[in-house]
Length: 447
Image (cartoon, rainbow, N blue to C red; front, side, top):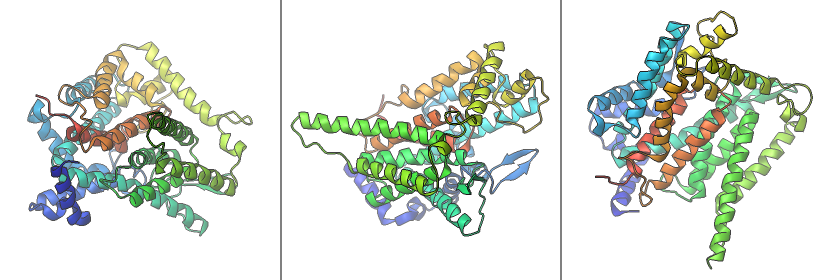
């Protein structure tokens, strides 16, 4: 870590939790930082803090993000030098989506979703503009990492209070009286999908033993409680993707240890390896203690018994999307046209606000974009993961590990969303905004 970065960290530590709030002289900037922290903390709020406007939910995270929206618009208007990684691709995709929205069988829904997309896009431009200096970026990153811990604690309290006779926004109890925690999300699977980014972020930093943002104790605390909360959602999709992450990372750690031994070094498995093993064992024991068994766990997939509703619904949604895409492969219907187009294909009347039939962002994106719209979208995804001419990864950057953690979390978030609907989820786009900010801090100086 460079002397400059060390001094930044020391200055940030001396200001405690307040960070830039204690050093900035502008009350406007302090308000913007506080509102941004609120926006980060509330990205998963579906059933609390919302307002109904013209049949659409306006969320507290969106209201708190308005300063970021302003900063994003200003960055776009200032020109390419202020644009984020893949900024041109993102703006091109937004422009194509606007045009495609007029092909939606429901123009109102089409324009409504486009406005939602533009709000998310402005946040992607706005957060990096706010986090230009190291002190602000460090503070916001710490808030982001800890926000998953806060929501995990809420979910665990939700679980405990239910058995004490107090129901706090609990959405579902399965057969046998087992509560599936959902935090402040619509349902447990949404909550697990949100927590998964925090699971990967905190876990990757712990694996790499990067304690520049959070202490070892804080990372272990965050990771363990997030894992416990995901287990208690009883989301089978989350279990599968979590298993994929465990296999991938534990395999990498074992390979690295073997390589180190062959090179004459000391073969050592990091603390994260043993914590992960302990979490896996504890999760299994917890599920068994709560009465979960193999049949209960597999119910809904059609693997055990005749009930395959969960898998059937998702596959039916994806199949329908492929059929709608096949009918119009070149031009899509816009993000707000997906559900009206599916209803039209099925010969049913679309009811305003009745969305979610796609059941898969893969199918949703095909119907929304068509081949024309997929070109800028894929270009933007490529830029997010691999950079562009101005954003080239610097392995020597003190932010390199955090940057990789952000990218891993984004990759696995897309994996878990493959069989979930709505790519405009606020927490996904807040994470994309952090990926954009991390590129600015982890890139090489490119002439």
